[in-house]
Length: 384
Image (cartoon, rainbow, N blue to C red; front, side, top):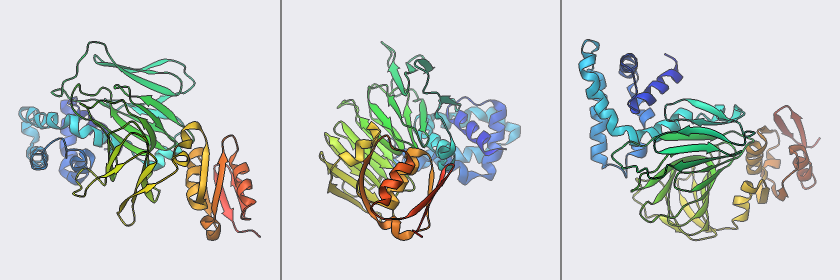
């Protein structure tokens, strides 16, 4: 069975929408791929904070035991028993599952259009040229596109109690593009190139508001003291006590960073960390080093961290290697170095309408080097 197909079936299973035939296929696959199944649902990733850890472990074990014990001759009498456990996980697991389903960095780099993965596992392209289009809707919400923005609105008079499972969408923005989304609670999110956001199409009327970010985004959170807002950014867990902040969490960067613009933020390594959280005030940054596993707080000039949302590339005493990572995402190109020393050189500059060639030529005036551009690749060479 193709990997993509099994992931769709798992998603449907967790959404309680699989057919009898799909249950049979999934059962056979899980018997041979138990560890892969565990990775897909990622209980450890999202269950903590929603269910007690011991209860989560027991439910996970029960779910896997049901798969192991499900004999094809008895499947019809046991299918509903399996689905009983799936229902417990629907609202908890789908968020983690959708991230792993769609977080293929290579594919994300190569795709040309913004895409959205809907609650049923299907994926559709979002064409920014369209001025107005209905993206998705249900009995509780409607999602409409307005150019480079999708707006989710909860239908008037509709309530969403936590006894019902949440439905999640995942928005992916490829290299070379940016996109905005307004969540059902009014929170505005501006996604940078090479980023994805997984979120409920409608939040519960009571309880936490949780989303998952991979890449970089600027958040303007709608204040609601009864429904705290949190962002799962991989190894960083950000709990919102204020309003405006930027998170950068690219897998190929050295650091994961949270910069606060307004309000207050609580940042920790992850939801299960025993360490005391760092509380940020405006113009402060929490950065997590992937190499030494340390979380630190520093005072910063936020302008260089949030200029991207206005289409500006702003570098302040940054080494060329880190700059090229941002250039790759902004221009949807790949940059390789044949000159290590140039990569260590530090630059300051501000660009908005310049081409990649014009930016490299500007840097050449500070530290001379050669470069060659062919299609979507740039090679940096020592000066001959």
